[in-house]
Length: 85
Image (tube, rainbow, N blue to C red):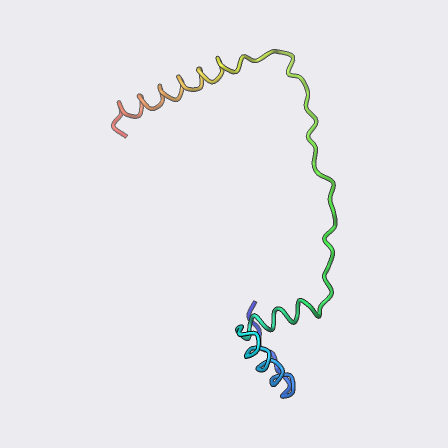
């Protein structure tokens, strides 16, 4: 976030001193100082979302499903190649 602030002369001296001592940029020193001075807000801990599973009522054979998916994809690619896409 970009913003314009007015810094009192005594604070300016403190900031310049900190920048030189810490060998950091003014932005880094300001951000570090503000992080230390401002209270941290606690993020509310949420319960993890749990999706309840239910049986489908059938036993799926994954090998056959994957094979069918591959065949359908191959047919689609062959169709597109035949059309010149």
